Structure formats: C-alpha cells, structure tokens
Length: 432
Image 1 (cartoon, rainbow, N blue to C red):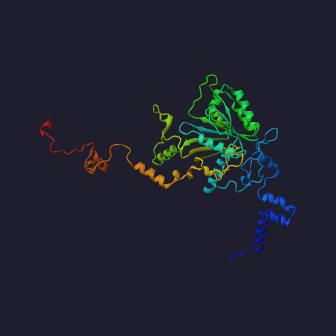
Image 2: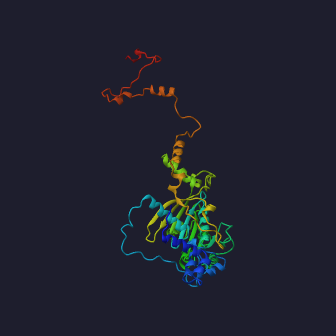
Image 3: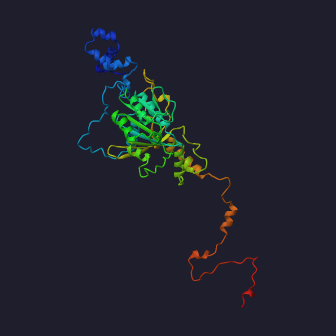
C-alpha cells in the first residue's frame, strides 16, 4: 500500500486547481497572484509573443529555444551576432582531461548538430565539397528542413536547382543578371529577417562566371546581417587557366582558407569498399573519373540511398581544427514533430546524425566477417589451385645446387645431376 506525504497530497490538489478554472475561481474569485503562474503553467504565451500568434505563428512551450520567435520582427538597424559571455579567467583543471569514448562521441556529434541546426556562431561559412559520385544535396536538404522548422529565413542562390520549397526565397541566376544585381537581390531577400541561411548551390559558377568577390559576399552575409553562409563546390570542375593571374591562389584554396567548416561528401558504398580493401591490405579502390577508364564518369554505386558520409573539419577561433567522419541518413517523417501553425516543418525530436564508427553497417563484426569471407573467395573464372597429384610431383623435383643449402662446402661449383635410363652417355667421347 502506497502512503503519500502531506506535501504530495498538497501538490496534487494545487495541480488540480491549476487545471480547473472553476476550482481556482472558487478559491480566489479574482485570480489574484495565481493568475500569472497559471498562465505559465498551462503554456499560455507571454504578451510579447501573442501578437505573433495572431499573425499566423504558433509557438508552444515544448519548442524551447528551437524556434526563433522574433526572427521576422527584427528592429531596424544593424544586425549584430550574439556573443557568448566570456569564460572564467581561472583555467579549468578538468578542461584538458582526456576524453573517454562516450565523451568523444557526444562532443563531435554536438559539433555537427550545431552546424546542421544553424546555431548562432556555430559556423558562419560552411563549404561543402562534392562530386558526381556523391552530391551534397542530401546535406543541403537537411539544412533547409531544419532551418525552416526553426523559423529561419532561407535564401538560395540557384545556379543549378529549379525546384524549391515554397517557403524558400529563391534568387534565380539563370537570366541575364550580373554580379551586382545578384548581390542586390540577396540583400533584399535578407532584409525582412533578423537571421538568415544563405545557400549557394555552385560556388564555381558564382566565382568564375558571375565574378562575385568572395570577401564581399562573406562580409554581407556573415558581417552585416549576422547570418550563415553555406556554399557547394564541385571538385570535379576544374577552373580555367588564367595567364594574367598565373600565380594567384586557386578559388578552391581561397574558399577553404576563409571557411570555418569544410565538409567533404562521400558515398557510403565507396567508404565501405575502401574499408574492405584496407582490411585485406589492398590499395584503396578508385571511383568515377579517378578510375581513368574511357567513358566512365560516375560509378553505379554512387549517391548511395542509405545515407551520406561527411568528412568534416571544424575550425575554432584560435585556428585549431577538429576533424571527424560522420554518417547522415535520410530523414524520416517520424524524426520531426507535427508542424506548428505557420511553419512548414515541426521541431526535431532527436538528433540522428552519428559518427561513422557508430554505424552498424560499418563497424559490426558481422560485416567484417563478410568482408573476410569475400576476400577468401576466388575472384577469377578459372582455378589457380594445385591438385594433390600436382603437389606430390612438385615435392619430388630436385633443383640444381640443392645441396648447397646444407652448408657443406669444399666441392666448388659441382652440379648435381643424376642420370636417368633414357640418357645416352658414351665414356669414350671424354677421352683425349
């Protein structure tokens, strides 16, 4: 029999009183000091957010800090990026303690989660490196989905894409617009919001065709509007040779130097093939254009539908890089909650990006056993093994200089040869 304390009974009574307006009115006719606690308890919006609810945006208390409630109601003036408070001047003795496996996984998953969730000061400029074997579209789609679920203004400079979500502000660059017009349209698209996500689906076209200065673009997005810039650069597109600026750095080198995060996209099937070759001490296989085969541009197992492998390098303000390899599977409908009124997507229930070493298909012992079993199988259409009869005949063969292995010296270079019955030897031919 469970015995409740007086405190627990009192808490249950107050809980019932909070949920029943009739009981609360009976206790206190005018509400009194319990009006504000009741509104907070039942999840009623504060007064500063009730105006947003009338405009079609509904924010519930379980959203917490996920949704940017005042993003499209920013005051006029200069946009400023929020800064974290300064740390303690006294050094923490446990700050440099060695991490165990669980802390290591938690730390690096948190780094990638901050980039995916467009957190403030996580990564002002993120560069995605892809090729034909693995496009960056799965990662970009997840970025857009999470940004829209957080009420972030999403602006896309489209050089390749043609279809976007209705909530995305698309700046079409397929027309006769030049670099100055693109920058003006970008500034117009970012003005209504306090914080935006700017995505460029081809940095190669932006720099080499439109001739937009990367420094000006970065200062506009990350400096003036305190927003996040994400660019995709295709590694299989080589820049044109410029004889005038022959000694100038390549555009890709300049982009990598400016980026705060560099993420390389790889196919999950190709990563598994590389690991299988490593387990067998074989050279890593090449795919696509690196094969050097005539007519081969993209492999059959490119752009694996199971997910995308991300080799990420995060750069701190001090310049120290942190690198890790991640696996991002395709998003499911069950990963997100029901969307609130006025938002296209709901909040993320649980983070599903993981380290590559935590993926069962990559690190399980069963997969390693299958790899070893495949290594033992014959990879040719004919048998290279010897039969028992061939093995016995090989053991009966006596090679020249075989006795020299016994270490018996003094006989010079005498060749050991036993004559057979078929040999015809005439002793008189050797006489002089």
